[in-house]
Amino acid sequence: MKNNVRLSAIPSTIAMMVVVGLLAGFIGHWGYYSVEMKRQSIQEVRLQKDMAELSKYRNWTLDYCRIYTALEILSKNKMSQEQMRLLCDEIWILSRNYGFNPLLIPAIVFQESMGNPNAKGRYRSGAESGAYGLMQVKVMTAQAIGKRFGLQIENADDLMRPEVSVVVGSAYLMRLVGRYGNLKKAIIAYNLGQGSVDSKIRSGEPLPTFYYEGVLAKYRKLQQLVDERMGETPTDF
Image 1 (cartoon, rainbow, N blue to C red):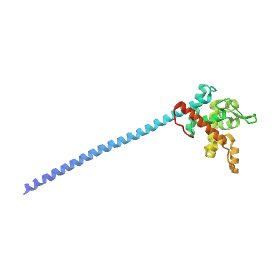
Image 2: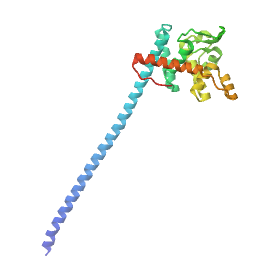
Image 3: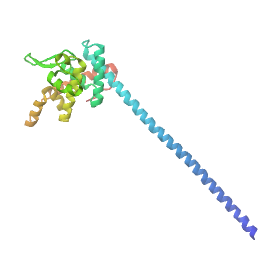
Image 4: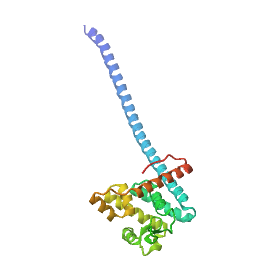
């Protein structure tokens, strides 16, 4: 009787051992695949980050090339290669720091001075307006803005330096963007003056848009010319 009990218990024991073995195998495989999937997931995240970094660097490089090409188009031999390189560096850094389209500043340069670093602004009467350089900034305005960047602006000659004009003019434009919270109003104020813009806003008068529309037209023209040289797709502000 005892032998019969022992013999009948053997199949159950074997079956239990098989089940335990299968479970152990399953757990082992599950653990391996779980670790492998986690490893692949980490690699995928790293790859996505690397691709995003590469895309960012590509865009930065393209932006730099767009700026330099725009300056070549505007310059027409009015600036040296070294001046254009310095100017391109400044505009590229400013566009990254402030987050604006890299061709915005060249478009304003196009509107203000046609790319002439020695331009002197004039009123319709023919009298000098007191604005100088690529971005047609007045000396007093430049002196106030320049203090923030450690730039010593003494006279109009300083504003004839392309890199100085662009740094001061761009900083002034960004200050206006911060004041009005709107690029369109800031561009209008860049031309009209913030006192005049504030007065019109208070009185409810519509702001004149001819200057803004001029900058936008210059931007589109410049973008078209740059795209023709580089084969890129046009973008807006």
